[in-house]
Image 1 (tube, rainbow, N blue to C red):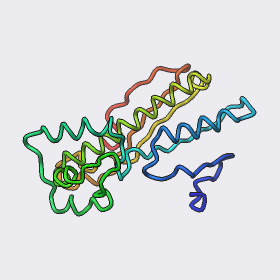
Image 2 (image 1 turned 90 degrees about the vertical axis):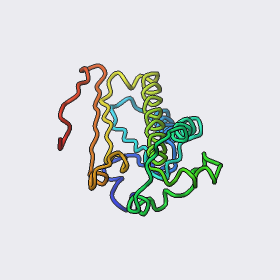
Image 3 (image 1 turned 180 degrees about the horizontal axis):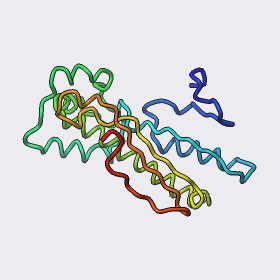
Image 4 (image 1 turned 135 degrees about the vertical axis):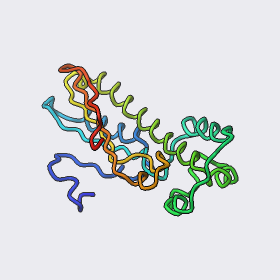
Length: 191
């Protein structure tokens, strides 16, 4: 990551966890360990990059299983088009949390299965952000923090409209707990 310039401007840069299947809770643990060893109370900029919502969609069973079970119960599932199936690439690998290869192969032909795996990643990332907020609050960082959460794309299966699935989607949220109340700006960017 440093070779691409990502470390520019940072006093401390840790790319050891910059790998897709690393859960946000592990990213939090590394950040909190770094915060604990800091020798100063000076303001800081903390950038965390969660990969939970990126393939190969490795959410743990307690998050993934209920969503997969809901797909199995759904009577009218939608088969993937040949184009959608062709774009899956490395995502076709059986998730570590799912030990039943036959179940994976049976459901992998349906759009809802892939939406469920993506949704599990979103839930896992949401949990990681909530965990980070709780820990930063307990350490006294949260009350004076500016927190910005962004995403660079959305679920490629979220739309059934041709061409929409590859559209760039930027999702942002900002919070400054002691300074202002949050607000939603509508319509979203590009909308």
